[in-house]
Length: 226
Image (cartoon, rainbow, N blue to C red; front, side, top):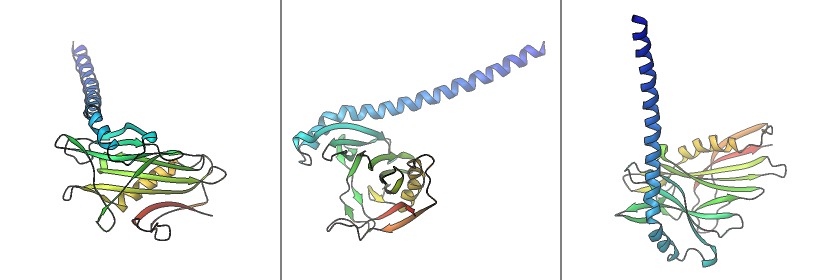
């Protein structure tokens, strides 16, 4: 009579674990859906705000929620928003917060901890690509830029990362997170079976490439040596 009892207990433990795991997945999905719903309800106000900013000509306007995540840890999600299609192959994106129930653009600080104007892009051509992602586990947003050579092999890959600062309520340029992202994401852009003989990851100051008046920020760069 003991064997059936053991079997029942074991079966109940397995079923309980399965139910618990399923419940966790369901709760996570519900949380993500709720975060998206918050921004969908704000779309009319968000559209009015961006169209009135004069940042995009009428023929290039187009609003879309790209990604939603809680980057600040306050339980109120931020949103990566596509609002313009100015480039030949890229769209312009901006990062938005909710303050007092209204959407507002976040503030960024450069390597010198000064307020900076930061824009994001998404899209790719045959040789060049741009992407922007939210990274909630690091309270960060990052932009990745890459270029391939004539054979399609990765020639350069650069990452800019900005991490939330609770004290100043800004997203600050962060080299450490940029390096971590570059190591992971740039490697995935490698063409299969075409790994270069040597790869190096550096942090550089792009003074030589800077445009007058533009922030000469430090970037984590994943570059290839011959």
